[in-house]
Image 1: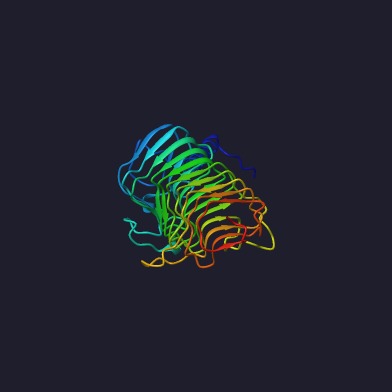
Image 2: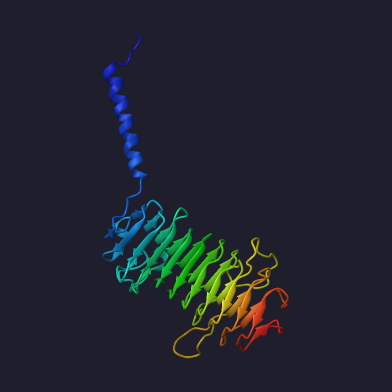
Length: 318
């Protein structure tokens, strides 16, 4: 017997298919932030001024990129002021941490954004995989307090990001990690007590660190240029992408021998193959291995001028 579908049944089936498709589409659309942000899980998708009105917590929801606040638009001003933004690895006041639970991103600037200014104030961004992450160009960060994350600030192929008076401390990995991109600047910022590096530049160029502090208890180094996550400066296989034309100027990479701080391995470490970088008028001393070490084994490729140190390698460093 031949079975045919009635017009009613066909219409009902089509409606059901469209309904399911509509629900699926809705689930893939980001929740847009209003100008007054009161919960995690929204995306700033239009230019304008946005203000975080209260403490934000991962349990309120996450964006499609697994973040608290995503930014995809250009010409945005975001004011966090004195409100914490806490991930799953911290309590709502950023006063305790469980690093194994760190996940997601506190504030994530996506590649489509540009000309964004972010003012986070003096409270914390904590308990995330990346406290803040930028994949964009021309982003200004002011007073970022990012701690107890896996990485405090991750610049991922970002260009012309500027960080003024940022504080990136007690992170499981590095305070600042820069991979790819170029022309980023840190001024009067501090990265201390991180489990890896204070500032780590990997395969990136023309970044400048001016009057910054990578001191007091970063386990491997205050400032490290190269691709080795374990702080080696003369590996058998050099980095695939060179770290070149960076400048560390009038900065600090020392460790106090008192007051409960733990000495770091190197003040300034430069991996073999990281070349054409400049180090000028830096203060580094009290580190357990070397205050300054260059894995290239000579002073041909990198420039050292008027730095203050106790120990160094090679001996030609000035």
